[in-house]
Length: 75
Image 1 (cartoon, rainbow, N blue to C red):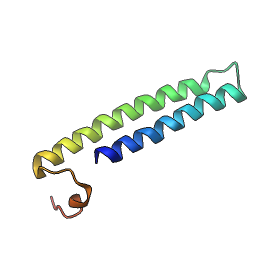
Image 2 (tube, rainbow, N blue to C red):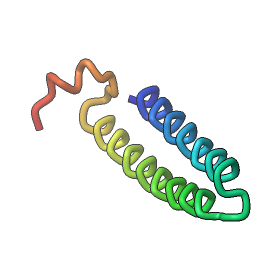
Image 3 (cartoon, helix red, strand yellow):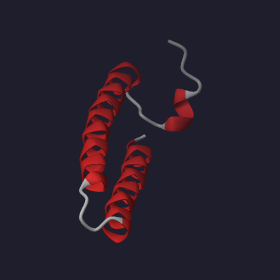
């Protein structure tokens, strides 16, 4: 689950870099892309905190965070 979370964060960072680059290329004097990127980074940080809390809660209950075992669990 941790590897999946890291992969998701890498994808979000790639999107943020694209926002900044396209903003710089298409509208050199504007800061809209950078502001949107800062907003996306804040959302990603909140999402990461929530995902880590969920992972910790699952680990406390099952003592395992293997994704294949999570589909077998019934809460």
